[in-house]
Structure formats: structure tokens, C-alpha cells
Image 1 (cartoon, rainbow, N blue to C red):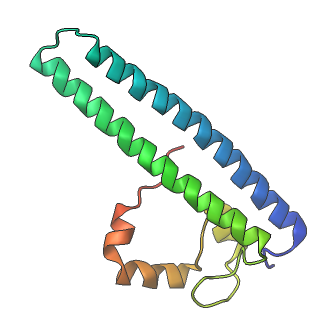
Image 2 (cartoon, one colour; image 1 turned 135 degrees about the vertical axis):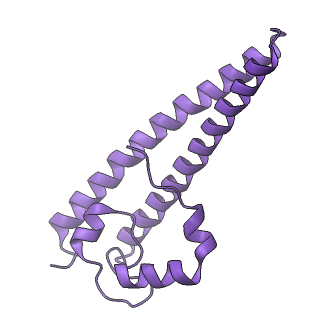
Length: 135
């Protein structure tokens, strides 16, 4: 059954909207934590080397999480744009319908599984940089 059918498309939009709201909330929390961490660092509190190292690691991890979540928000925006233009659920490369099960598992999928595998094989650096979403 093609994803273009309205009920299924509405369900996918709700899933995308819910995930977008969740990511925006998480990003707000991450930004607040990064700001707090920076403020504590610049308040003149003396840190030993271990504390400084731990702070840097926490900041680096939070920054990577922020980057990952921003990338997923961009994917959601692309998926919603494809919905608006009637392209959602159609493989970007071969033009065939992306199976509903794939879209339910990964609502931002741009390609069917075969085309995604071919894309990842020909673009190893792109697929290696992509982190799976955290739940």
C-alpha cells in the first residue's frame, strides 16, 4: 500500500511532528546545560586537571548530541517538505514507492532499502558520520 494514501500520510506527519517536538525540547535542555557549564567554567572556580578533563568531555558529548539532533531536525524538515510537494514515500533515486514498513521504522527515509544500500556503498564517509537517533 503506497504511503500517499491520506490516513497513512497523516499518521507519518504526526510521528514527525512528535519527534520534532521531542528534539526541540532535548535541544533546549542541551543548550541550557552547555550554557551552565560555560558559566561555571568562567566564574573563576578553580578546577584541577581531572575536573577540567571531565568538563571538556561532558561539553564535547553534549555538543555531538546537539549536532546529531540538529541533523535529525533537518531530516524531518525535508520529509515534511516532501509531504507538502507530494514526494513523500517515493524513493529519491529509483522513483518507486518506499515500503510503508521502512517509513514507519524511519519516517525520514529518502530512499528504498536497495537504493539506500547503494548510496551508502558509494558514499562511505556520509554514512559513517550519521549517528542513529537516541530514544
